[in-house]
Length: 351
Image (cartoon, rainbow, N blue to C red):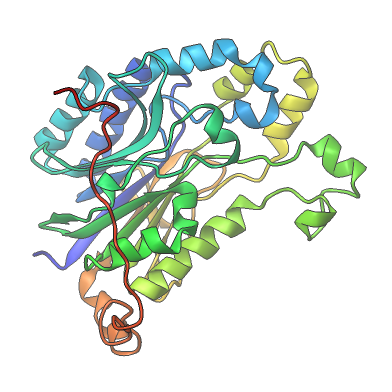
């Protein structure tokens, strides 16, 4: 197993609600990351073909056409788009982690918030469906199952993935840590509004520090806190890969809204999520982008689309286990007993 792993985290926006064009963009980014000697390239939460942020800023009664478009532009895990991405992984010899809105073959309207980890030979290593859609996401996605709570054991290291607020679930995180996870991928949307600016203003201003007094959810701080906690507990590296909100997304969501100005203001002023790397202590890991052929060291990506890179020495995952190995000498298996059901749930058993 190689000890040095180069990871490329794509801080990018999809071609909003276009599976085919976003797939083309994905393949181009895979080739670009491979040309920079990356071993693993990571894409954000439901990169294909959109994150349904409209459900946070528009009433459900306004969103029927957007849901219909979301269903039509979601993809099958074994469909043509994913086959093309798998072929890109194989032809470029690179691991791929990609978030997508997954269609079900059992229902015309059932969707899952899913992530596929694809091997360097184009094989599917892990197919994960988000356990519980969060807050307004329940208007789009159905709950997943434990089938994807698995580590991808690759020649470059043992890689695990959780989607967005699953990284708040200590049991899901522990299930991955207990499989000797060395690299933890967490994927996130570009924005995650919980209040409109108008509501916040009425409650005392956007600078309020407490959510009870009306402040918006700070996804930038919340994502970093959870990602760092996992790295510290697991003694693993972290890849926090967030989406970028494109102007095409804002225009699409504003169009047809009953309060277009409020929707536009909300989407434009909400804090943007960041893409960054963490070391096994939870501290920031040195990362860089490419300007032509030159490296430019940056701590994170937030407002600009680009690919962020970092090199990880997986031997660095070892030392911290001396202090507290929560799946080894720092655990009490006589006290705690965790059972994880990894069966894929079927709707009907026909006999």
